[in-house]
Length: 512
Image 1 (cartoon, rainbow, N blue to C red):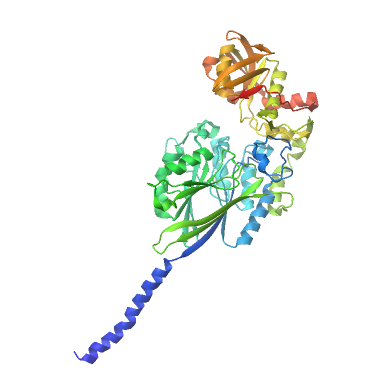
Image 2: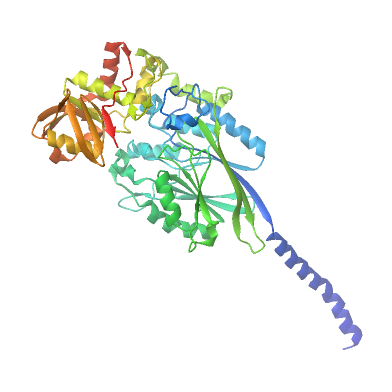
């Protein structure tokens, strides 16, 4: 073979070598300094508040309401849709609108339509992803499935499964492409949901931490980032963040926590390096009065490892200055028009704001007083968390009362001894009427009825709601009689008869 031939082959091989080098350099370049931006708009615990609403002007200085810039005529999902669309136009990059559960169960919309109005409005508003909350399970299982099927966005939940088959009721996760990055969303539900009606029809709510430990490693292999849509509450979110490696972000709900800025949970030294040295936790309070916004810069190093380079979170107020989205407003009208005359009826007048002041909850006191008076018993007990909204000064409508008491609980008449009542109070720390009590370090140190101390051997007749009755130890009750009367009806009757009601801040319940 001649030198020329050898030289010729070298010359022919040179372009091929250059092509290989060029390909390698392009591959290296494709792995270097890639930056993607993702904005998550988020809500949680909207509880059927599709229309604008107002908060009381009176509240305790430690209340989250003290952090709000607007209290009157705020929220409304049609306005929320307008604001979300404006953010999407403003930033011109991947933006996802997500919800962390309890989107229903709290207003006449939920009472009448059992979540269907909420899902229809959220679909029209352009939601991309959501997880269910425990209050979505305050329906039949068939209705719960119907809500999932009718939504134009996936409901995600990895730890709600059929007891017999182990199959998830909803898809456990979804993966979305954000430029060159893949972002996985995993849904988790609080185990408190296991006591709700749908769960009692053959569902199991598995441990969120065990479930996350099962799915997160799988998602880290399939995606570059892992986001949890969590209806667990902020305290449980902290536990998940420190117990499960590989979670970049938790968008939470359930605890109705106002996080004006996201929390950051640093990663323990032994943790997974892929989890970006910590977990971001975001939550935006309740009822859709604000829209959470979280801007993320996602970065890929030359070695191919992705990380969150920076993030910024804040809450955007939704006020009357935001125009309602016409399409979403039409959806709301379709559900509201058939019921607005009935729920718009005025039943009485509030002479002041019924809300929290210095640890006293006037709205709870009102409900307790109403049940005790209408039933003619010595005392009434109502669980904290069972009265769902304050009452604003002015006319009180049936819609207002439905928001205060949306659950349809009935009233149970109780006979208890003084000793049994003390154990109930220590265990439940309920709102009360007819009695006054004080708890210190978990013990009842004072209990009076009509100003007189209650002896352990005394026998008293009182009332409670059906929900709390199911949580009272039977050993503490002499007898319990289901009356079949709805607590909401007794409250309405009480206000109609009184015509005007005044908030009571009287220190009847003291828990330290």
